[in-house]
Amino acid sequence: MIDTLITDRTQSDVTRWRTLHDKGWDGMTEGEKVEWSAGVKGAYNATDLNRVGEAIEYIADLFGGFGFPMAITPKTGWTINDIPTSQDLENYLSNVAAIRSMMSNIPVYPAGWNAPPETPETMQHLTYEQANDIERILTDINDLLVWVSNNLLWVFAGDVYAGEW
Image (cartoon, rainbow, N blue to C red):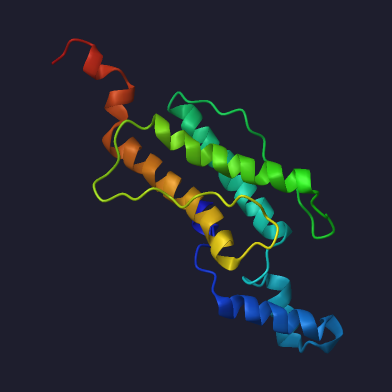
């Protein structure tokens, strides 16, 4: 699931989306229709909203497993015909920010680890860099939790405080 997140969008992806969009369905070749239907990286649509929502659910469950339950319920049933409201998009970013803020519960970080990018303040005029940042936050936090699971789980189990030292 986390490996489906997209963190490498480029200006050429956006340009490609714009080219296909401007052609319209009827003006596209069969190959372009296949490309469009598969999901063009330069767009941000229901597929992206669902992918991020599912990743948020997954990471929230991981935090819950470490004893830090999160009361968030991201929407994951977006369809191509849905038009998100401004409240939907605020909730979307709020969920991403909530995941990012949970890293404060981790007592130590791996050597050389850099904090994930800041959560964008708004989805209005979203750039490809900001779209990458949204999904990079989730991959970075997931990587941190994997590291914790492999290296620090004993701290969370309370062994240090059991008088065994």
